[in-house]
Amino acid sequence: MAAALERFLKSSTYLGEIPSGALLLNGNALYPWFIVVPHGDYTEWVDLPMELQQLLLTDINTLSAFLKGDDKVEKINVASIGNIVPQFHLHVLGRSSGDPAWPGPVWAHPDSKAYQEGEIEALKTRLRETLEGFVAA
Image 1 (cartoon, helix red, strand yellow):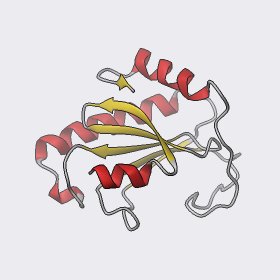
Image 2: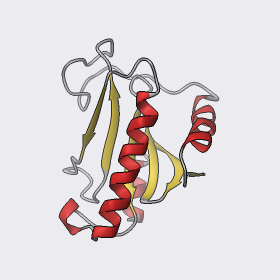
Image 3: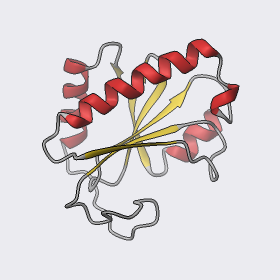
Image 4: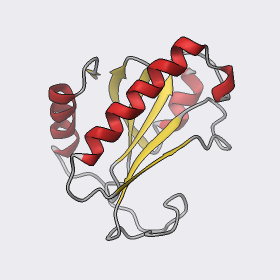
């Protein structure tokens, strides 16, 4: 998993740990976009032990509720698209009709915006206050 995490960190920020694994934030601030990398070396959902699947499902629901608390988020997309990084991971992404890629996919959309100083720390604070089991980095 270390090599996979290294690959993710080229375009994401490590926020900390949740019960099912590492919680990352995609580096494009145009979209509220989390990536969950479960503990262990797995490539497919079906490879995950049932207990880890259940933890992951709970974490997905918790992150989705967190994103829905943002007035700008109209739709939550959850995807497991691991063609570039084979380590199993899930994207939990908030979408809105006003985002640059709407209604298309965000994966290859050219618009990007970096997070401003302090935004990631503020997000970690909100996560600590609302997500049970979140341990910030």
